[in-house]
Length: 268
Image (tube, rainbow, N blue to C red; front, side, top):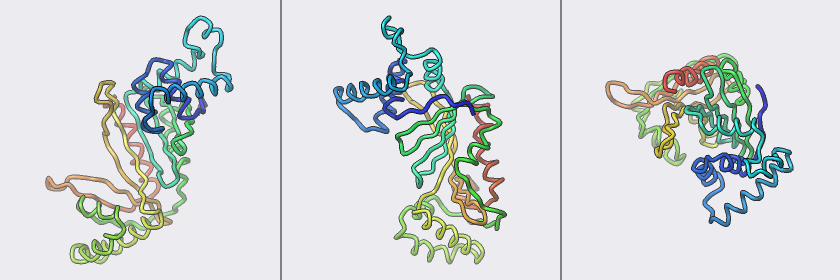
């Protein structure tokens, strides 16, 4: 991966605004920093500009000519980031981290790691290297797999977001699942509780460049265990939506994550 930039949220918002991407800057700023008064945003921009100067990213000769006071390379990077029409995102909420890939072309992406919604690490990466970066980001160490599978309705799956409802759900499922499926459900719930009732997820987004912003193209959830990775997907069965929860190998999980990058070639 070719490193491009490490910056704070405030600095990234400032860079976007300076390069003319005002709506994107405002949207990112409000989502990560909260709403502010015009004076408050002025303070944020001023502080971020000073940090960019300290990092040597400020071109004083351009500033003297009232041009955008950034290097041509940095301006090109900001435009690439803002103009990307397709994004893949992996979220590890439990550890306060996200890994995003913004498509530049069929062969290249912007690598974008976000830490605690504060620090942004950017790099340039080839499509063939995305799987390795996803693997390294999560660092799952499960060896082998004990395959298990069960199916819930969307309403039943939603109950798992509220731990106090799990016992009632387990009682209900005792009449609906067979012994092997119920064993899988109990193992899944045990793992979920060990991870503070939080699933990790991967998703893809098409960015329209209009007032509609962007829309989610696909999503799946997952949960690591010592003997495999639980994968959660919504699917249609006989025109009815269901939630399929199955434990797969690390290799199968990585292959599923790569579908997002293959799909991008058809939707971008």
